[in-house]
Image (cartoon, rainbow, N blue to C red; front, side, top):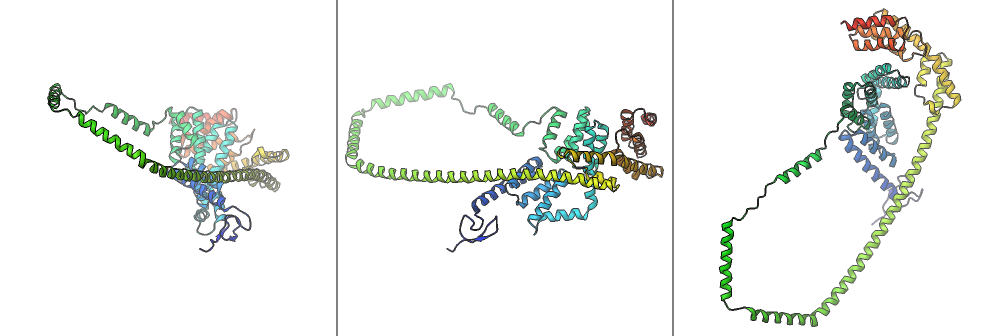
Length: 483
């Protein structure tokens, strides 16, 4: 048979029948085992995804990619799982990485092309994420009313946004509104039935846990077995008496015949002579051959056991090496990821400062909206605060004036959008915050959404007391109550 030609999975070099690549020295068996392990985790993730267990599917698919980052199937499926729970940015990231590894016949390219062809949908996802981030900021400021408004808007834009649904559930639970919380938590479990946060909220809302179907079936089986009647027929008293009498008659007939004892003694004596003959002449040669066969069998078993132990030891060493390589790779990946995150945060702050210098206030705030302030240096953190304190009041005023003009002109839809952006950028000590919420309340009344209008007016009364629109808000609340 000719030599087996292969291509090294690490460097791509061509080599012949060997376990070690002649060019880079890679151990081909390790790559083969790694691929098999990654495929096993992919299959497990696929099974969980088909059962709507998206949390478990994501964990297994991420493990598959940790083992083999070029597992295209696992990466594409991970992107679909992220998309299903509303994490569109994570989904796009996985598909872009997938197309970089494999360009030919990759379904991830079709997903990306679909997004590029429908930019409005992508803008909705982006706006939903912005609303979710704004809600987090409002919660940090203990402004739960505005957080609820932002979360409702995020869910309206992205109906399957699991993180936003869970956060809104938590806000309702905190305010003891278990009816709304229960509706939201059931909505999350319909998307991802293993979501740990939703399952915890479910127990908090309903105070119960569904019984296990397997346990119920076992209990039914056990109960049926215990209740099964004894089907063994019982002998009646007359039948037992009849059979006893018959046995007595038979025994009487036997003892009336000639005794068989002498014949039995002769048979036993002949049998003993036969065994003596076998012991003296036949057994020695038979035992000798049997012992020889047993010795050979024992030797063969010992050889096979040693070979088996050697193979196990080799596999354990290979698996230990694979685990060590994976651990080292993960460590380096974490270090690089942290470094990239630090650099990215600094770049966002520098970009925002440049845009602020050019009086591009909206663009400056957009540039720093994803900044992780915990990663910033003291100097960058000061610049970040300068961007917020300078740009937000200007944008608040611009959107307020724009929304006020649109509302006075009867264009409620565009006025609502502008005033909501103004509300997002309200700063501490703003002198127009009450007016912004008042106009939003009036628009909600015009649209027939009286619950939302009530929330806006209560925001003025609770968080901006003593402002010029406080009395107006009380008047509008009384009018709504009388409807």
